[in-house]
Image (cartoon, rainbow, N blue to C red; front, top):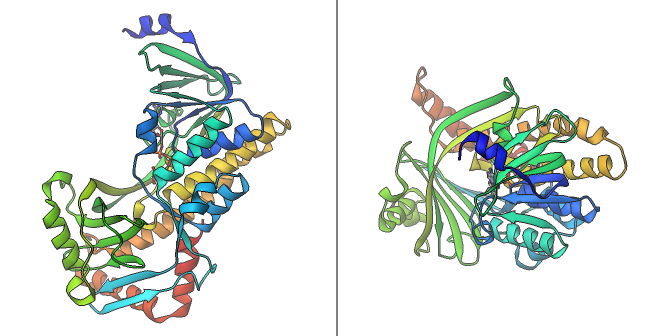
Length: 404
Ligand code: APR
């Protein structure tokens, strides 16, 4: 269909006060908050419901995220099946040490709850409350965002084009979504490639440690994070460009055992590798997060590396800030929160970016084209030793690790 035929065939579909693009953590927390305050909204989601509810992602919630879900009545599933996590175990060539961060810093633990379970909860609550979701609907453009009646053009499940008019548009559609593609030319995008790639794995096996495991080894980093009683997330640092299917299950388990020093600290609980993907660790931040009637939320606002598991937590924080601002504007006639949305979110985003970068430098021997690699390696070892030996460093770590 040519662009003009497309435009000619365009028909008006669901209009709403707020059109939300994307049914991930950002979009669904926002949708539930708006709906609970009587704001008319519709969610456009390109995937089908089954795909949305079964996409394994993160699952490591900071206390602030739990509080947001709790005060918006979205925490029932989390309360039933979430598990507290409060200890990290670092394994290096100098031995291992445990850091009980629950006891330090803010004195609060993480809650481990698989993100696809959280998304399924949020979706169910939203639909049960009468929320509208258009599955199989791919947004292709946001128009008139600089005016009072923006519109989202989408390809509906039946392949036909449709236009969704709105008062505001919330782009909760990730880093490759239509929200970013609709930003005005010259919008600032601050980007950093960390030069590290991870083979991310989801094993159908119970956790091997009672802690979050960070293994630093001359062959590379390995990570262990429980997802549930019978699912465990592992990471293996790999060469950039590695293909996810290049590693057999046996090779993966042998490499994990080697780097996590299983011979010294106990075997890993093995099982089938259910999911695998290579992720190149990079970060970016869009500034500002508001462009007229268009707002960026979650990964659409800022991509953060998984090194400190902040992504979904930032998405929830931003969704609540925007949700409250939209309610103030649409229900109470006060647009002040919308004007302050970007300046309220960016400090939290940059602080999370800084700590995630610090974690990457702590856990990986990073390439250093113009420096002495041994000098950097000794600095890294000193940072690890400082975390092991100094209470002040441990308090700082705990506050940043669980903070948002
Ligand atoms: N039209 C409709 N839906 C879209 C489009 C589009 N053009 N592009 C993307 N989507 C949908 C995706 O199918 C997905 O369901 O938007 C949703 C984006 O969800 P997430 O990628 O989970 O992003 P977000 O809600 O910001 O959550 C961020 O959660 O995915 C984890 O840890 C990850 O940091 C990330 C965090």
